Image (cartoon, rainbow, N blue to C red):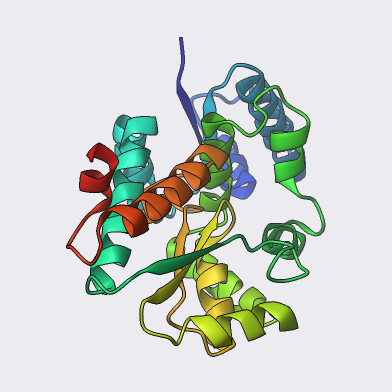
Length: 268
């Protein structure tokens, strides 16, 4: 019956103050802010579990971030797998257009624990949640597996960190601590500065981090397709990764230097 839960996360201190000043309910028992906080935490934990079990999207909303709440509401109305696919193809078109029809070879790269030893997502949540990684419960301990709904839920978890500006600060600091493996740096150095060869990162992880890591290593020409925030416009799943590799392969074989887009190639 339900598709989305947006939990309005009012600070416990605010709730306690409203209760104490409610003259219409003088018989209401006194409850401390600490007890109210425990109540809220238990309520959110139970709702998250129920929503995972029933494939319902859940997110906690900070009432101070009104713009973010509006963005969540609008996004919940339009975001589905078809919407995701359109945005991914749009990103692919942009990357192809930037190559000015000279692209002949595209390196498609995975990142977390591949080009670098670290998993940026785990490091991110270790910094934010004191070692508690909510992705474990989402991907490993629920029936959702690595489905579109699971990755959509992960996007909403990243949204709970705060507005884009807050999240970007965490991501930039994290990116400065992640180093590319020596072998991948040598590969990128030999290939991506040659005409006709490009490189794109396709990741289910944090786009902002994996934009910054290559930049910090001197490879600002590496493009990134990732969708960890609502502002990214799409969600990357294993199906998206596979589809992009097939499209890139088809483009290099079909175009022979002609102008093309992902949409036109997918129909040719």
